[in-house]
Image (cartoon, rainbow, N blue to C red; front, side, top):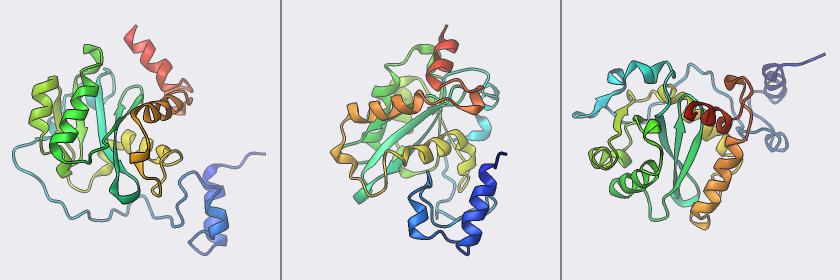
Length: 218
C-alpha cells in the first residue's frame, strides 16, 4: 500500500490540532509548525511601482517555459537579516546562489547579480522576474550591465515566481533562518546549489536540473 504526502500531512496536523508538536517539526522538510490554505495570502505592505516592466509584459516564451534563459529571482534571509540571492531558470529549474556578504542595498544586489549573469552563455541570459522589493531598485543598472530585462510581479503575488518560491523552500534544508549567512562563502553557496541541481525533479520527468540544462545547451 502507498500513502500520499497529503494524507501524511493531514494526519500530522489533525492529530496536533492544527499546529505541529515541536518533536514532529524536526522531521518535516519545511519545518513549518502551522499550515495555511494555499488560497490565503498575507499582505506584504507593498504597492505597485511606477516606471517598471510588469510581468504581463514578459515575452510569451518565458511564460510557457519553452525557451531557456528566463530566470526568477529573490532574496532569502538568515539570522540578523543576512541575505543570499537565489536565481532559478524557469525551463530547467537550475538554481544559482549569489552571496551578498555586505548586505542587500540595491546597488550591491545589482552588481552581484550582474557579475553572476554575465558569466553565463548568451542563450541563458534573456529575462529576470523579481518581486517588488526595494533591493531591485537599481534594475536599470543591472539591465545596462547584462542586457537582461527585469520584469516585476504584481504586489503580493509570490505564485508568479512559483519555481523560485519552491526552490527557496528546498533551500531551507541547507540555509535555516537561524544561520548567519555571513559565515558562508560563495564556494559554500555553490556547493549547496550543486546539491539541489543534482536532485531529480518530478516536473522534469525525474531528470536533474543539471541534466535538463545540459540538454537545452546542446
